[in-house]
Image (cartoon, rainbow, N blue to C red; front, top):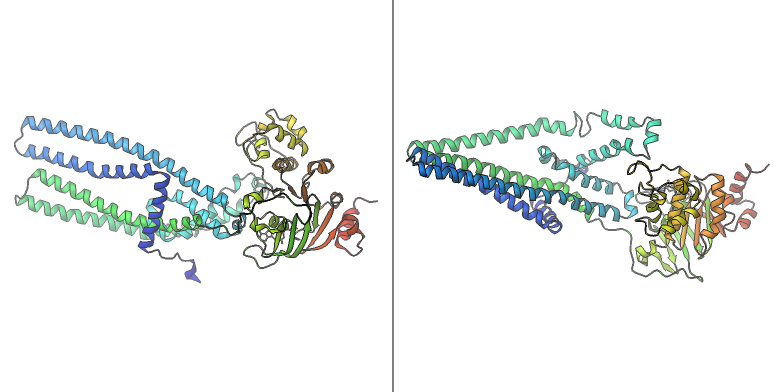
Length: 558
Ligand code: ADP
């Protein structure tokens, strides 16, 4: 069991291969960066030798003929060479630094795009989060080279430490969590984590131990060895010089060159270490980059819903969430005609939202199939299929961008349409109060004149966004949960207009609002136990629907 947590050993050949692949990616993204680094390195290695050689000639001249003309020339020439090489070095470094900065943006973009393209289902997987954290670790790791060789061996513990750190460290800033944190004094989560002196970054943790022992030993060893070696070489040069083998200038030249060679060898060893060290992180990076979509994605074109035998059909669909053992949906079969209004009702946890998520291909069924126009939905082009659905989820998210950008899910291209959708969603009065109209920012992060919305207002914006998408299926999961009774009545009275010509699915706890739907499906413990019109379902004396209906109705009746 214990071994399972240990990092697998990476051979040098594997490490080299991974570095080579990374090198290829860098080269394709930023060929100039490779060129600038190469030239900078060659330049940095060669120039000192020129200076050493020139200084040795000056010393030789001083110890020998002391010809004033030759001395003057040598000094001026040395100064000129030093100045020119410093200037060229500065240019090359600037070029390299500019390439380096823009390089990090390029690398970030690889991961940002990958993160956004991951299947929704993969977000349930802790492995995905580990890989994403590893990727985010790369950036910070560059800053701690002193530790880097040790970190390679402990990349996993390090990544886990960082995951905790990011999660807890930023909770207080997260405006969706900020109120709860303060009311429930939730910083104690962080406290518990920080108080654990044995966690990776704490005083008794992994890195503290490592820096006390192995890092200390390594640095003493490497410094000690290099002192011993250079002492030995210098002693040899001195003995040779005393015996008259060469002059003072050569002594200077040899000793200085030896030092350079030693530091070069040191850099070579470091380079070897870097290759192995990078590999521990690159391995995690490539696992993320190579992650394949688990959803089957077809190529079939999506046709408009066919009236006869068309629409959506669930056929014996059962579903377990990835990594869990319990069926959340069990053998669900239901047909849904185009243009109709379906209400899904049932108690919390009965599987209604999961039903929607399967329909929208956020997950694929574990068993059974979902058909659209008689064809399994997996066979359709994924993007085209997704365009058929406008969904307002319970936990919808309004970004901090402009109101209009939220509604159009991107740059505002059709202002009139944005305003019309907001009006249909019951937001017209509020919009009239905004000086900057649909250009008003949501929240104050980007603009001090930005506005904060109430839950109900945000829900209206989410509804407007769904209307703007103008998709053939409109799905509302608890569409009016945050709305006051007047706003709710307003939305429902408009809804027949809003959803004209579309198919609509509502999930609602307010059964009175389901009455106007053509059909109602009652979910219970992962199954559809009743399906029919309001009147049909209510007339079933022992039915769940009747029980739910009267449970709610008692508050409204005398
Ligand atoms: P409803 O919408 O009817 O309230 P849901 O479809 O949201 O019910 O949830 C049905 C069941 O699935 C619940 O027991 C819930 O705990 C479980 N569930 C929901 N999402 C996940 C998930 N991502 N992973 C595992 N279980 C989940």
